[in-house]
Amino acid sequence: MTKTFSYLFLFFYYLSFSQNSSSLPNVQIYQKIDNKISKRNYLLKGAFVTVHNNPELRYAKVLGKKGWGYINVHGDEVIEAKYPHLSDFEHGLAKFQIKDSLSPQKIKFWENYLDLNGKPVNSKKYSKMIRTTDSLFIVAVPGDPAISYSLDYGLLNRSGREIFSTVYRGGVYPASANHRIFAINNGKKYAFARNDGTRLTDFIFDEYTGHGKVAFGRIIGKGHYIITYEKGMDTHIIFDERNENRQIGYVKYFEGRSVVIDDFGRIISKKYDKISPIENSTFYVASNNEIYHGILNKNGEDAIEPCNACTFSIVESNDGIVKMIYNKEKEDYERWYYDETYKLIPIANKQIDLFQNGILTYKKNEKYGAINTNGEVIIGPQFTQLYGFSKFGLAPASKMVDGIEKFGVIDTHGETVIPFKFLSTAIDEREHNIQVRDQYDSEESYGNGRIGLYSLDGKQLLPPDYSFLSAKTNELYLGENLKKRRFEIIDFLKNTITEVPTGKARELVYYSQQQESGYSFSIREGNISYYGFKDARGKIIIPANYVDEIIFFDGLASVRNRKFEKVIIDKFGNVVNVKAVHF
Image (cartoon, rainbow, N blue to C red; front, side, top):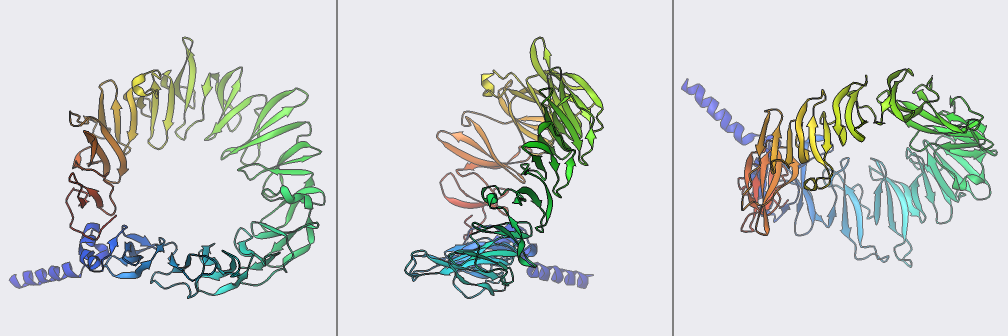
């Protein structure tokens, strides 16, 4: 028994010393490496973060006498602290800059990227290095010494090979959206090349643009040519010169007409005089002779049947699209609804106002109702206002009550969920409740009205007595109760309301940045605010004894105490003896 106990003791004793630092609690990591960092006279300026999506690799930025660097969780230096500027890691690379006092072009720094081991992408000094993809960089070196800030550009891959030599005075630019085609400029004209360095054209173009997997080069006086990755310049298709100031989306002019071009540069529609992209949409408005005819989808196909005697505009959402038609004969507007397959829903002669989550609100005889996507009226026109339905099947609505417009909430059957007695109602889809407002003229509520809360099934959670309600979690709220003249923590899980203490030395209580385990608060004593920390349920964890707001990084916060001495504390308020931490 004694022998077995001894083995177990030795095993756990050994384990305590051989434990991997990456598995230690964050505070212990900082304590364990503090001496190692301090001996180098480094300051730890940032929390440990995971790099390159590898949980086993956690680096923190340090500042030494020579500059910035990185250490790992063992305190080992992975990138020497010697760089005046050093970025965060992104896709396994960090950008650095070194002072360059010898540049004749007055360029103050040269730069490159370091890998996870601190090795530069290559040994060359670049005056500018711009990442375009995970593995491609536009680079520049000093150009003509007689010209200040003159640069010559090239293209570099992640392995350090220059795909385009740094000789292009006019720059190197991604031309296609997928960055497979680049435009290069020799200081006078543009040419196109693949991202592997293969030249596709000569330097003959005055301008370039690109969409999808293709690029377009313009020759003044001749027109626009398609440049593809596989074939280069296509001389058989020349887009009209008038496209110069009208290039939007994939629309171009070909043989006097508008055309739609797909991602591969193919012409897929050329039967309309004018095609205009709809903003923030995948549809186009098409017309002939200035009369709007129909809607094209991204494939250039007629998405909605043409209308020869009307003009219209389009509104698109996740549920479908609404076409607003102006009928010249009736001199009136009509609205039509099409589902996501462009199927017409027969609700003509009714003014569609808003559609959301499969339900459309419409207006008839100055009253609002609702229609489903089959065109069936599910709520007759009876409301003064009716807003979009939420994912819970609820919508804010209003009615006239004794000559005053009052708001409530209804369901998809038109049944009242929240009574019509408020000045506004709003459904909070994130917190799963309904906020109501009343008494906008109240000075105490700062003109915002008194706020209350209801559940989604219409039960009152809080009366409208609050100037504000701030959600800390789904169950916890912080609010100022105007009726009782106090601040409160409302815990819906425990069904409790706790008063926030106030007193002579605590003239006002402030609540600030909410953090994972709680939030910082402050009290006012004379002209000075002192900060403390509470857990998510309002219990004071750290008394208000610090002149700095308490914000934690990796379980530690750097603050000044009442004597204005800088200390490092943990989430329980304990002072942690780590000299090197300077968040």
